[in-house]
Every structure is written in C-alpha cells, then in structure tokens.
Length: 437
Ligand SMILES: [Zn+2]
Image (cartoon, rainbow, N blue to C red; front, side, top):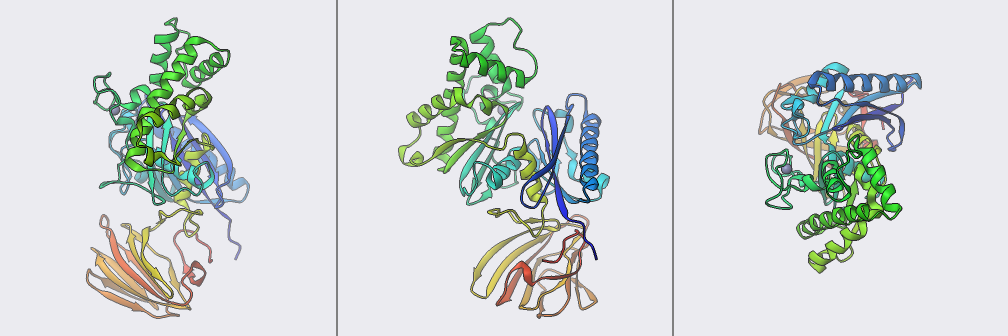
C-alpha cells in the first residue's frame, strides 16, 4: 500500500505574529507562513489566525502529496504542559486559561503537542541551530517579551509543574518599574522591545519617530549605531550591560556550556554582545564561566517552528533529542545495558499504542497506575490495574490502551533481547500514521 510521506507542522504563537511551517523529520522547513496573532483583539481573533495559518500549511503540504501527522505548538508561558492550558500569559491576557491543545485537536483531528515558546526555540536551536550538540545551555528569546529555557543534560528543565525558567521575570532592579507579571524591575522590563524603546527615548530623544513596530525600532537603532550615533551606541552598551548582569546570574546558577540569545532583538548582537561578555566576566564566578560561550541564535524565526515540530515527530525523534514525547504520551529510559532496557512509559488519557509485535525481544510490563486501561494480546483484550504485571513473549501481537478520560497510565517496561531498537517493531495497526521502521 502506498503511504504518504509524513511531515509535521510546527507553530509558534508570538505576541505579534503566529508563524508556522511544514517540517520534515530531518528538520527542514518545506513551507513557512505567518499571520498577525492579534492577541489584543481577543481570543477568537487569535484562534482564527492560527486556524487559517494551519489550514494554509496543510493545503501547501497536500499539494505536494504530504500529510502532516501531528502538530507542535510553541505558546506564551506559563503553560500547563500536560493539559495544554495557557495559564496567564502576561503579554497575551486574552489567552488566559485557554486549552489550546484541546481546541486544536478538535479542529484539526490530529495530536497536538504544546510547549512553552522559548522551550520550542531552544529545542529548535539544539536540533538545527547554534546549540547543536549542547547538553547544557540557557536560551533567551529577546522580543516583545523575554522568554527563557534551560536545557540540562539534554533535556528541558521543567520544574515541579513544568513551568520553570520564566527568566524574563527574574528581578534585575528591585525598585524598577512594574512588570506585566505584577512584580517590579523584571529582566523583561529592560531586555525586550519595550525596554529598548524606553532606553532609546531616554538617550536619543522623545520625538515619536521611534514608535511603531518593534522590528523597525531594531533596524533603526542598528543603522544609527553603525553610523556611529552616540545615543544609539549608548543604548546598546546599556542593553548589553543589563543582559550581562542577567547572564552572569544564569551562569552561576546553571554552569551552562553556552547562553544562546535569540528573538528579534538578537539582530542588535553586534552592538550589545561585547558589553554583555564584559559584564559576565566581571560578575560570574570564574570557574563557572570558563569555556562558556555567549552565542547568537542561528535559526531566527524558524527556531520555534522547527522546535515545536520536533515534538510532533514520533519514532523519529530528532538527533540528540532526549525528551521522548510520542503522540500517545512520553517515555524515558531508566536503565540500559547489553540485552536489556528499562523504560517508564506514560500513556496519555484516551490514547493507545500501536498494535505491534517484536521478533527479537520479550517484554514485561509492571503497571504503576491505571484508572481504565486495557491490554490486548493476540486479539484478546482485558482490563489492567495498578500492580498488574504482564509478560509478552517475542512474536506475540500486543497493544496497550488508556481508556480513561483524564488519568495517565504509567508503567515500567522491561525489554529483554538482543535487538532493542525501533527496527524490531512490526506495526499491524497504528493510530498515528507511523510507517513500519
Ligand atoms: Zn515580570
């Protein structure tokens, strides 16, 4: 049977634009498009912009005979990553408590993987950009707001409820102006378009020519700095110094291999990076920054799109990607050695794994928690409960199914055999359009 080649759609919902792309399993963006995100106009306008963008991308893919299997979406934080609820994004109040995952899944009938926007960009830069191959780095997105992500041991550092690394809301000046989050003097107040604008007005005059889209502001400041305008140079020097103060703290906290700076304001890199590096050296503990680099992100607007799409691929996790999210849930390897592998699997509500068999390995499943779950072995389906253990011998067809509406199914899977890789899976039936490896 002819199978359509599989691609994924990555979407990056920002304060100004919602961008999207059709992305291949190799991380190449085949088509890209954007709409004004209209977050000030209200929820429905923003949703309509996303729907129209995704419809368009699906059409472009279909014209080339491609079908998107899943959708990854970078959204403004904080975000409840498991449910996909946007909690209270300071720069997009209309999106408060909106379950974007649910709405998009209903509208498009495919699995949707939400992730905080800066985390998506960090994953994109790690997959195809300037953080390629890095295990420990901090990503900063300087734009309408200041987004942050911390990658530690190759994984996004999530915190207790998946919302860690709101670096933009670290206080930089305790008595500074009020921030949209309610606190005072947050890094975002200074290191964002808004921060740049107030710096420009203070040092270069209040004549109103600066008001307008953030991109124009960035281009103007860059141009004037290149011409040697004293005010513009001073703006960038101050911006770099504040960024350096923040980065020195981040270096002391996380001991990263690099801090990667992306977002629209990264286009001012030439003007601010020297001051930032100087300030990092002046403040951070020398042993922690020895060998650390401050890097400019390489992917520009594609970072969030590529990173969001990376979450949507199943069985083809991008190289170096150790966050193992699959369309049915997620898994991580607890222990591994010659001939065995122990994994913890979390199957999302209303999800099932493919009906499959292996020819070179036996599996034992220990069910940790289950509300309404089933196992099918060679056509016979029976319920599962916490505490059950199930042995599946090589050659036998099996499927795991979480029928609960809201509870995760968690199990420990031990694989024993000589060939513990994707190529030892024969998929008889799959809900997610995955081809056999
Ligand atoms: Zn804040």
